[in-house]
Each structure stands twice: as structure tokens, then as C-alpha cells.
Length: 418
Ligand SMILES: CC(C)(COP(=O)(O)OP(=O)(O)OC[C@H]1O[C@@H](n2cnc3c(N)ncnc32)[C@H](O)[C@@H]1OP(=O)(O)O)[C@@H](O)C(=O)NCCC(=O)NCCS
Image 1: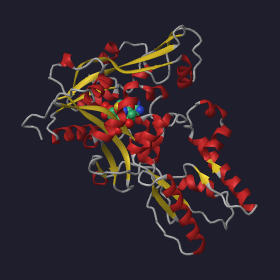
Image 2: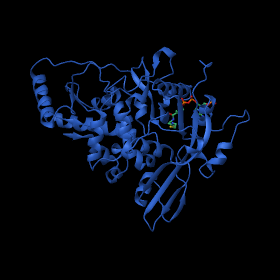
Image 3: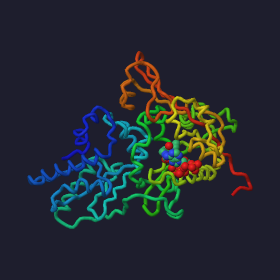
Image 4: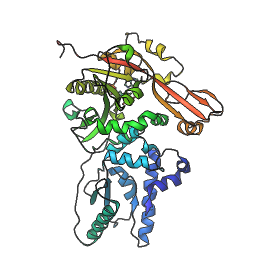
């Protein structure tokens, strides 16, 4: 039995002490080595089981290239619903990044096998017990040795993407497209700096946002690729329409309020995140994503879209107070920050600053791991990807990051607008 994770850890021993296993080149190398190891074992007349992520033609090819030409490869895909996957990773002390619901929800949908013309057995491990899944796999492998095997061809496409004509992009909600959806591989890359996956409120509740509000989660679905190329998250919120009453606590506050004991009736939709695959960025897709989010709100009687916007270039100016950063405009009068600019161009107005939109706390050791920086004394540190510096207190063994966002309000279209 070859464990791909173990090979990765052999290549990068720091992964054993908690460094995220997020280096795609290292995974490629691990898959090639796994293939060579399998070839050596096959040469000794053994059967080999290799376990790990071989989803995607390319990943599989990295492994398979190393095998002898007469090796017969059979694939077993273990599937599970997002909700069950989250429950399992959170109960598993050995899990790192995959415990995080924000990361997991993107990561989960992306597992589209894209194995073409292969012998594949698909097992839903949410519905089957461990014993049943094992029995099914054993029976299938035994049958495969003696007779014809069930064939399943997977459709999938590799290669670089370009933004296609409107007809090939659709924006269905998760409630409309239930179940696991294939995601373009690049959406798997860690989008946010590691520390952003440790916001305590989102850690606790983002899984519920995905599971309980599927009608407000939507995809940018490319019909031609048959893959998700962008994702939008939003959640209903109660807001009285007064700028000042938008919470200082931004994202955290809105999510927490939605799952509190007494939840007031929602009056607005609150954006949480829009994420677009790198190949599809810079082509105007974000505008359509924001418009679609607002439309989904209106479909549910929530005519106003509010957004605690994370300005995308603020991390380049971590020492500039957010109030000043907001005032930076280009010669044409539009915001210097592209994400604020995009919202503003769609008619949104800045309502106020959310000074504490996301909070991340950890021990000094955790912060050193997340930021890959030594933090030898108490004080303020600029860390990559953070919109403002972090504060480290060595005496109390804690570090804190409090991220400011900007509340923007997209008012309902007027009657004479389309
Ligand atoms: C932020 C994001 C959603 C924008 O989507 P996008 O489709 O690339 O954006 P668009 O092509 O619609 O461009 C929007 C504006 O940003 C500008 N822009 C795009 N990429 C840029 C870059 N790398 N640097 C500076 N400006 C950029 C565009 O020029 C455009 O402004 P303009 O029309 O005034 O010129 C996308 O980059 C993304 O998913 N990023 C990672 C996740 C994230 O930061 N999400 C937002 C916070 S939740």
C-alpha cells in the first residue's frame, strides 16, 4: 500500500510538523515517486494499492507514466457529501487545512476525477459503512480479475481557459445544482494567505453557511468545460437600512448573527466572498458575479445587497489606515482599489468601515507557522497578504489579526432601470 501523503512528507519533512501540503510541484513529484515505487513492487510480483489524490488526467498520468506497459490500472473513487466530509475532517485531529470549512468547500467541489475511458468504481462513503465500502471494492477488484469490468468514461477537459461567449457561462445556485460539482483545477490553489483560514467564527460556522443556505451559493459554470470556474457566497441578513447600523464586525458579525438563537427576519442579502479561477480573472467576470448575487437576493425578496468588501490591493499598503486608502482615487475619479472600483461602478456606495470584519487569533507558534516568519519579540509585524499588521504578544503567547473591510451597499434597481 502506497500512501501519497506519506511520500509528500518524505519529500518535505516540514509537512509532518504542520506545514500545509499545498505545493503542487511537490505533489507532482510525490505522484511520480509513487509510480516508481509501484513499478518496483509490481516487478516483485505484488499487487499495489496507491492511495491519494490522483484526480485529473494529468495527476493520474504522472503516476501511470512510471508503471510498466502491461500494468492494469483500476481506480476507486471515494465520494462523500460536503456536510459529511466537514463532519469527518473536524473530528479528525490529524487534519490541518482541510478542517477549515472555507477551504474545504472549495476543495471538495473540485474533486472531479476526469479519468477518461477508465475502469472506475465509484463509492459513496457517506451512504456506505467502512465495511460495506471495503466489501464492494474487494468484490469489484476480484470480479475485474476474472471477467469484463464495468466501464465508466469521464468527460473532462484540460488546458488553459479563456472567457467564452456568454452562452457557455451560467450561474446556477447550489440548490439548483445539488451534489458535488467538478471544479476547474486552479480553484484548488490556496486563495488566501494561510492565516485567513483560521478566523474562529468562520471556522465554526462557514460549514453551516454552505450546508444551510445553498440557495444563496452560486457557481460560474462553464458549459463547454463542464466545470465550475467561479463561486459566490452570500447569506441573508437583517439590516434596517441605516448605514451606521451595519455591524463593525463585518463578515464575522453577519455570519454569527444568522446562526444566533433569535434571528430577525432577513431584509438584505450580504455578500461573503466571490472567487474566480485565475484563468478567468481580469476579463470582467466579477461584474457578472456581483450582478448575479444581487439577482439571487431579489429572487428571495432581499432587494438590497450589502457587502463587507475586502479591498484586493490593500495588502500592498498595510501601513496605510483604511480610511485614507478609501480616499485614494485614480485621475478619472474612480477608486484606486480595483474591487472597490468594481462595486462602485455597479452602483454601490460606501456606507462605513467595518473595522473588525474578520478576527484571527493564534499562539505565537501558530502565527510563525501560518506566516512562515520568525516573530522573535512582542510587537507589530507586517505579514504577506494581511491588510493591516498583526500584533504579537509573546508574554501572553498570542497573536491577533483584525481585518478591516468596507461596507458597500447595492441599492435595489429603480423602477425605470432594466
Ligand atoms: C477579486 C476577483 C473576484 C476579481 O475578479 P476578476 O474577474 O478578475 O475582475 P474583473 O476582470 O471583473 O476586473 C475588475 C477590476 O479589477 C481590475 N483588475 C483585475 N485584476 C487586477 C489585478 N491583478 N491588479 C489590479 N487590478 C486588477 C480590472 O482592471 C477591473 O477594473 P477596471 O475595469 O476598472 O479596469 C478575482 O480576482 C478573484 O477571485 N480574486 C481572489 C479572491 C478575491 O480576492 N475575492 C474578492 C474578495 S471576496
